[in-house]
Each structure stands twice: as structure tokens, then as C-alpha cells.
Length: 330
Image (cartoon, rainbow, N blue to C red; front, side, top):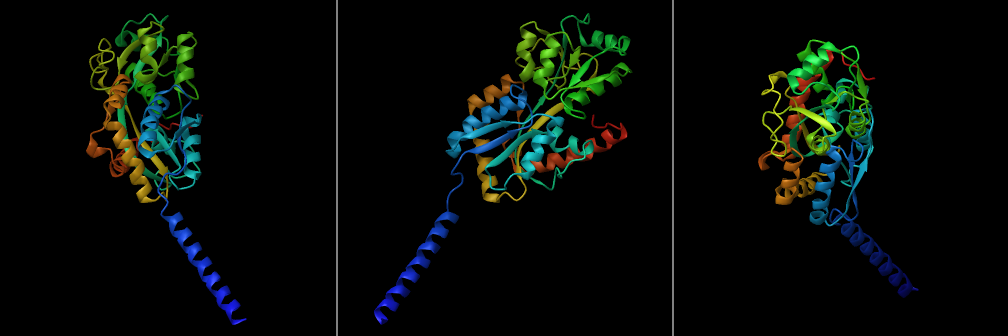
């Protein structure tokens, strides 16, 4: 009987040791051990979708796991950002987005999340201009003529954007100010379907990213009027900047960064940041970003801290302007 009790005690101890060792092994399990989802707040084929896929491909090699793109359009990306906010804070769901999602939306939409408190900044990625384009049937041959045409035809102008208060919308508002006129805006779920309607002649003007529209400009399907950044694009040196065209107040750019749900462990944030930074250092990735008209931030600004600081600075800049203009969700 004593021997049986001793044996039972030893088995119990062995079982406890095994469980403890298993727990330790599980806790020490390196991240990641399964595929990662990257939420993109726009439909496929837009700028952020293309950038996300370029990053994801390189990150797969660094992290040893697939990075799966999940496109969720609508409401200027607030639906996608809500999905990210509700995801488990374990590093297996991350998101890429811009000031539209992580700054502007909070001044316009009644969000169910806080754009600062419910996310962990991971990496500041890129910054790039928009391009003002129009359908080929427009009589305007340059930006000055386009602004004059918009003013003269403001009651019938059709101007598209991909979300109220988003960068594409702000570009349109800046053009309204330049033309001293107003016109109705047509909201789309993304720039890609809006571009298709510009090509088809159903929409007059749009301010998409060069990434999604330069091929169409060069193919003669739409007309490119001006770049909203401070310098001409290497991929389209024939298109002037808005300042060169005489409208410096229309300058506007789009920045992008990677975020994770609030509470994501700092070591996991660090690993994802390292994978993004390594991707941005790759010459092939840099070449692709340049072809898309995007500037990669310097290495010392590709940090979680820099992304968080930029987000807060943009909030301080844009929220008062949007509220003063009484921009509302449609």
C-alpha cells in the first residue's frame, strides 16, 4: 500500500512538472507561429493595397510566416480600423493605414473606438502626394484652366473621393477654395472604382494616388493635371506640381503607417517593426515604392514612437480645420 501511495505521489509530481514545463515552453514559443493578417482599409488595387502586398511579401521571409492581406473598404476605412481595434492583441492581426483612418475619421464619424487609445503604433512607413486627374473629355489642358473650368461649371461638376474628410476629399476642398466655388462630391468605397468612372467619363475630377492612376495617365485614359507634393515625380516628370502650376495652397500628402490593437506585447510590436524596417531597406522594395510615387521615411523615423508622434501632430492640425468647416459624414 505504501509503495502504491509513493508511486502515486511520484506520478502526480511528474505530471505537475510536465504541465509546468509545457506551460514554460508555450510561454516561450517564439512569435509568430502562424500566418499574420494585415488589414487594408481600401479595396484591392488601390495605393495602400499595393504597398501592403509589397511589404507583406518581404515580411514573410523575415518573419517566417505568411502575411495575408484582408481588404475592407467603406466609410473612409473606419470599418477596417474598427475590425483592427476589436482584434486580439497578439500580433496576428495588424493594419496599415493613413491619416484618413487614424486621424481624420475621428473628427467626422461617431466611431466605436478611439484612434489613439485603442491602437499601438508599430512603424511609420511612407509619405506621398496625390495627383489631380480628370476625364479626357474635359477642355482644360492644365491646372489653371481646370480651376477656371471648375469655377465656371461648379453647379454641374462631378468630383469623386473615397471617403468624407479623407485626403482625396481634402484635395477637392482645397480646389474649391482655389476656384472660389463649390460643387457636390460623389463618395466611393475606394479610389479604384472612382477611377473607373473617370475613365468612363461618368466623373469629371478626382485626386487619387499616383500609384493607382499614373499608368492610366500615361495610357491616355485620363488626364494628369498636377502633383500635390513639393517636387515632381521621377515616374512622371512631365506633370508639374501644384506650386509650379500656381496653386501652392493645394499641396497635400498622404502618410502611411502600420498599427496593431492596443495591448499588443512590446516584443511583438518590436518584431513586426523590425520586419517592416528590413523590408523598407530592401532596394527592390524601395524601387517599387519610388515607382508608386512614395517617399520612404528615413530609418530613424520608421519607429513606433515617430508614428505615434506624427499621428498626434496631425490630430492637432486637422481636427480644428475639419470641425470649423463643419464636414459631416454622408
